[in-house]
Image 1 (cartoon, rainbow, N blue to C red):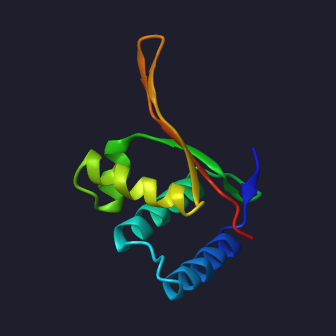
Image 2 (cartoon, rainbow, N blue to C red):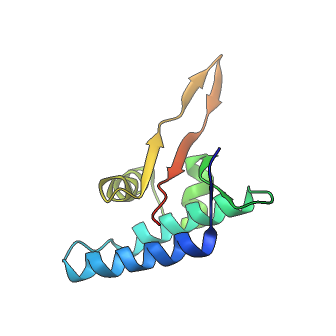
Length: 110
């Protein structure tokens, strides 16, 4: 699994977000919060050698950590991040009669 440099990823995200703001394609504040939450979860799940690029996290945990109140709102902000090319999302579901959380891949920005 590829690793990300946290500082470089954050810096590249900030630069991209500033450019998008100038081009009138800025992300909503809650979409930024969602991205930062995903980056934080990826960092917390990492071991030596950088930040995991892909993390699996359930909607409830993600919504709580990002301050998002509903699945519908989460889906809308997730879609923003996907459309901006910041994340790749693989929907969770059932696997062997067990609930599987969604998988988020942070696109390397640098």
